[in-house]
Image (tube, rainbow, N blue to C red):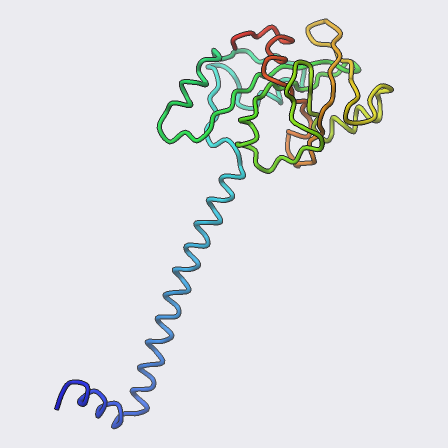
Length: 211
């Protein structure tokens, strides 16, 4: 009599007990596989959400507040900046997938301060949720308006009606025309209240060359 015969004979003699044991094992195995699948789905979901959050580490100069936009919108000035070559140093660090430089400043329109942010195309990698009507700024003097800013100019400016038009603002006491090449769809964040331009445009207008 081999082992299989002994097991089969035991199952036939104890049908109910054997059936309950098999059912219990099946339920336990199903629950285990379900938990594993749930764990994997949770981890994948968390990773996707983290990637959508954008920058995971923000490097700022000593003495510069993290929320620089809040300072600008209240009429303040960003107190400190980093040299532009810091970006290259950060990009060379292990495990850094992308690094995007930002130049923060402000322009005035109707005697109110509005955030002006110089960026590069690397910003799109960090803010994958951005949807731009039109295109990303590429040339000097081109800008993308946040949704709130676009509505404000459409309501209060005679020269701006949509993408392709220009807005005239004051930067550093100088009157400057900026061409709107894109409008950012509503994000529900501070991005809606900002104006984005090329890094060089922001550096030149704000007198922050090399910063």
